[in-house]
Length: 86
Image (cartoon, one colour):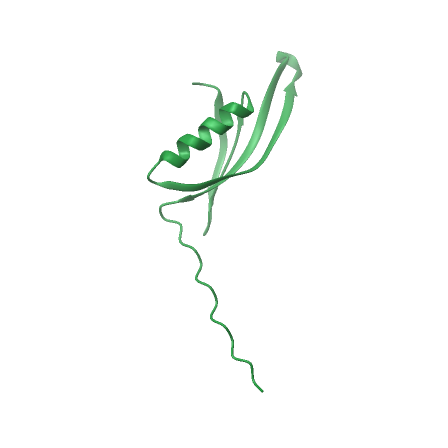
């Protein structure tokens, strides 16, 4: 609790992108696990995680970017094969 915060959430004709900061990598992993348990979200993937220090507080945190699919996400259909002309 209170170990993770989201700074942005975007979705534009594709997967949802979640950006935020957590106290540690374990918190990010737990957040991802909990997202995957949701009936509305699937396919949670970690795009990046970077550790950084906040000098004023002598605190290490992890900035992260996650990509996930919501129940509204639809895979784009594969393009039909084109016929080759002789």
